[in-house]
Length: 357
Image (tube, rainbow, N blue to C red; front, side, top):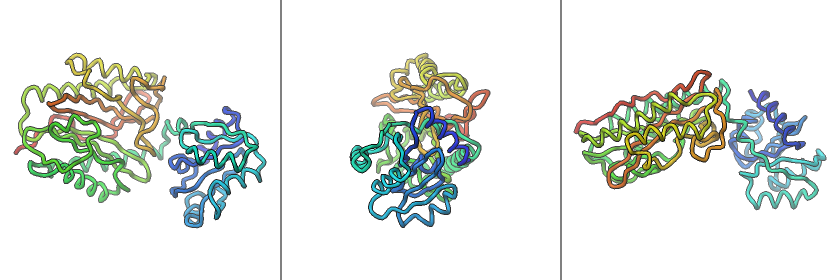
């Protein structure tokens, strides 16, 4: 797979009219080389694959990146990168302008003043997943699903949001997750109106929504799932809110497919919420790509730049409604876009779950 990815990268460099590229964003370093260390950079030309790292990672780099020349730096990463570029006698070189810091760029320019440096974005090359990536994300989703099944046995009035988060994270680790995919969100009661309500010491009480947004990392690939449950017995308005979000999320699964744009997918799900008068409380985008990073392209939102979703992209479908002084509901799946539509990779039940108290 690395050979195929490098071949695609070289075609991309031809399109951008650059002779080589410097890669230092960790997600892209891993994607194109297999290397999982940090403080390193790749230099890819049309003929050479070079990985510059320090003495801590030489043995690891040789094991993880057999298709690369491993060059050790001892006096600074950018000094060695500049020396390698000078030795190769390159003229036009791409760099990751969305990731390289200003100080790093200034250092590179200072050390290599004759280089023509061009900002390019490599993230788009990771949007369509290959078979190995899909398998890893499926496993990460399986870990998340099993953890949701476990947490339903654990939730009860009197425990804190952070207790739920800790139990989820511990169980995911036991099943093989490297670490949580992001800071686990557990938002209950009035806090359920916070889309990014990181778990606090708030105590779970009867009569509350509990929204849990969490994910696993399996072999450097992420999963992302949100489920909202209810502690106690819900009233009619609470049930209506939940069912409206569920219907919108299921509609997303129907319309997300190859050919649709990110803006259109977002708009169609918003239209479903509008039928119940809830669209104005949907305050974020419908979804995002998932892969080595938890938030990747393509985006499904009002501002999406994705004109056409394609098979083997992996995105989320996560409408949410957040009503101040009442409560919020979000339901999210990680989904694989297939030739025929959308296949949920997270499979936890989405029926309205009420925890008896």
